Image 1: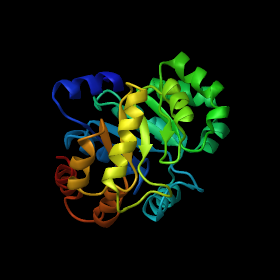
Image 2: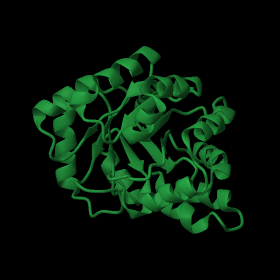
Image 3: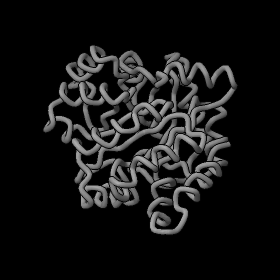
Image 4: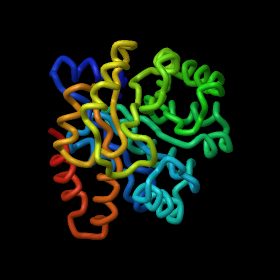
Length: 261
């Protein structure tokens, strides 16, 4: 599997920006996850971001909260995630990053979790709610295993903190486009562009934008000043509305194509 930094180099040579697709593992059912991941790969997605379902997802809007709850109800858990992803680790030939809250990983065991994701070719890890001040052991354990650590920057992050986050981040910086939870938003592109340019003056690490992005027009516009775009709620919403229908994977493939410029 290609490393995230190599994927960005590859895209840069092609004058393209990364399209990153987010889906929670086990949604709508663990038995569908493998096919959904492979469909994302075949649809032209550059990086897959897999969410670990959690019962109290404070940063997620209603669409992803409902998806996580359904995944948990249908039996999604960490051992099943490791088992299912192990079956496709050699066929998903694009980088995969895991997004999680810290609680499930803490309960499983941080070092044990990092060892397991390394075994199934996961390239990066991002923890939504782990404070930077408490990330030393996490960062060290990931570095020892060769796992990229992706940290978040928000519109209210200070310049000094941006510098610190940039020094700890590998793979890409995840810029949260708006304050609040995930889901469709009215993005202020001019302000967003200014903030991304400020960050890029501080670091050469790629900066990707997520939260509130749900149209091809937004993806294209944000790609003009960032290194990539994360689309989550829009994809999850489409899956929720269509997974019981005939030819679901084919229609998912077509829908992803409509989001990529």
